[in-house]
Amino acid sequence: MTPNNILWIVFIVTAISLFIADLKLSAGVHEINSRAALILCGFWVTVATLFGFLTGHMLGFEKMVEFFTAYFIEYSLSMDNMFVFLIIFSYFSIPPQYQPKILTWGIIGAVFMRLILIFTGVELFEAFHWIVYLFGGILIFTAIKMIVHKESDMDPGSNPILRLMAKFIPFEKNIEAPDFFVKKMNIWHATPLFATLIVIETSDLIFAIDSIPAVLAISADRFIVYTSNVFAVVGLRSLYFLLASIIQYFRFLKAGISIILFYVGVKMLISGWIKIPALLSLGVVLGILAGSILLSVIMKKKPAEAE
Image 1: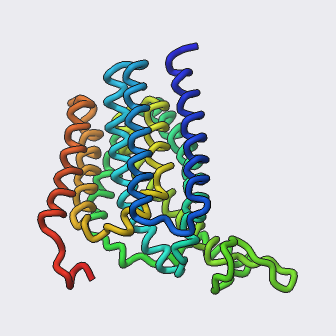
Image 2: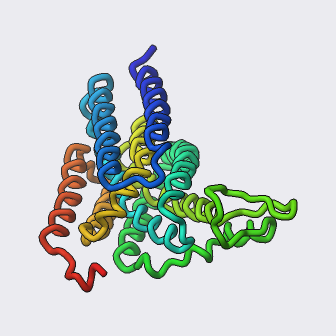
């Protein structure tokens, strides 16, 4: 058995086991508080770090650097996604105690959806090398859009998939139980929880279209791309509740993430002439993240702005 196959087995067993354990640990908790969220975030980052070191031990230093670079890019993009999820939950008035259930099913859907997108993306890269320039342009466009676009402008209720489903199944407006469907007068109705799940899954698909090309710019290795994505995604529940409690401290995070996307887009566009080492990319990504967080701490929002 090759080292790559062994790592695939370790990854699958570890990801499934720990995700189930994470669900069990928080099963009796109606709402994940900031302290529990911080502990869970630290736990998932530690697991990903250990797996990265194992990857380096078995596949070499270069693969380890690629894994960490891809992981930090995906994790930083996930932070921005969580801000959008905050708006979605607020729009549908989902109580905090019901949010973990929606996030859990959202993560499960995201894992399978990204599996398809990643392997499709790698196949496209291998078959049509010119597509790297298309993806590079998409990332630069996304980076610029992130700077000028405000989350407050989004309207979750205008989701086209949600509108299409409303033609086939009635939607309830009130939340009476933590269920996705309820039966009234022998007719099944979808609840606001299900509507929220649909919008979150749709949003994650849009995020994946942006983030997966960014990771493919770091590595075209299916193992590196998928494992780094999954380790970033499976910890989204705890990341969401952590960011929800300290969102006011991340004033410049979006700007930092957009700069990372712009850098990766440029990296893809010049890849035919200039090869940027993976270790340098890792340093750039970590430096931009650290700089945006540090700047957020130094230049805090005024009380009126935070409100």
